[in-house]
Amino acid sequence: MKRPALWLAVFFFLIPLSLIGYRVLRLGYPLLPTSPVKAWGLTMEIFFEPAGGNGKEIEIRAGLPESRSGQTVIEQRDLSGTLQFNIMPEGLNQIGVWSGEPEGRVLSYRATVLLNPKRLRKPKPPGPESFPAIIADKSEQILAKRLIERYASLKAPEKLKTIAATAKGIWEEPPPDDNDLKQWSAIQKKYGAEGALLILLRLADFPVRKVQGFVLAESVATQPDRWIAVWTGQKWEHIQPETGDFYSESVCLLPLMIGDTPLVRISGGKLQEVRWDLGKQTLSQWRAHFERIYRSGRFLDRWSLFAIPNQFQEIFRILLLVPIGVLMISVLRNIVGFPTFGIFMPVLMALAFRSTGLSYGLGIFAGVVLIGYLLRRGIDRLHLLLVPRLSFLITFVILAFTVFALIGSKFGVREFMAIGLLPFVILSMTIERFFILIEESGAFQALRTAAGSAAVAAITYKIIQIDPLQLTFFVYPELLFAIMGLLLLLGNYSGYRLSEILRFKVLGEKS
Image 1 (cartoon, rainbow, N blue to C red):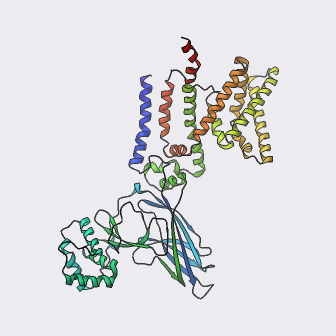
Image 2 (cartoon, rainbow, N blue to C red):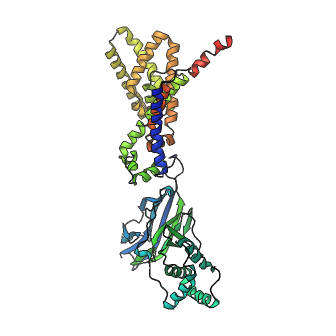
């Protein structure tokens, strides 16, 4: 192999390697875009009774999921009928507002949440809302401060764990005296486990948030989960207020409301029941990666093929298959030894088979070539010039396409109607070459080449039909450089083809 070609091939391999490495390690792309995508569906049903019967306006407000670090809300659907639906911010929350005159007694809302833990952004430090007023009176504050004074020297993460343990009645040695514990027990009864824990956390100068939402697990619930988010100086920790247990980082939480505001509020009516249904969803891989990349502001994501309009994306899905097809044809011709009518015919036929289907496509190909050959043999005695003769064959091929389309329309065979996507110019040239090959090398060689072309087109079709392969090249178009590198290596191959090894096997046995 020539050294310049080898170095150029290595260079072409390094380009996709570096770009894909950057996307995977820095931007959080999956190494294989076809790996399972975590998505959850949330359905909320609100049952209500309008005040004063029908014809009265109501307003319902509910906390909704929003895109945050590590999760993206990719779809929200309102199924409330005649009620007007709007989404508006309210502090740190996203609120859905339904208003108007209801026809029924129930409204529904659905959302799809796409999880991407690898794209967790750096946590935002707490704002003023994370420092709520302490609800205890002065005497209760003095008692609580005395109980946590012993933890003043601990670092924030360790101090947080020690204070959270008090929800279970676990105090660091030596424990407080019995009188303090008795008074603290009265405070826990007065404010509840959550309120008592919040008093300790605030007096220890921890920024805190009360959160309502759900742990992402398949379930149906009528009440949301509640937890306390505490800022340690580096990140937010999430604590179950009743037990003081921490949620592990592997647990996915879906916040719907930050603060004490009820998750669902109604005016002009009576709230009867709210039901939330959480379940896993299966998303199309194309859809999942589109949602991830389209919403990103990173440079490589802004220059992704997902950023172009949908109608043009379909074109590039096909264009990116052509290099894969020509690579396969190069391997099948130069390494395996399949005879074909050139390079373009098999790859264009393979692309056309995506619409006609393999069996119909091969049948139409064989039928058009055979009839075209008979027609070409019939006009041979007329001794036409090359250009008019090829134009005549092109006209015949289009006429054949029209007949097939009419037959398909008459009998409801969609594959026949898609015949117009077959490369008619290439087919016309194939008929001409098929005729010449029969005249020069005999019918056997011509049929062998036609069969080889059909086999290569069929194999290429099967490969480019692999949806994960299409998605991988669409997400990582820089892989085309790797194909160029492989083609450089193939172009320098001058060894035996596999078919030649079988062909000359007899000679080796005789010697």
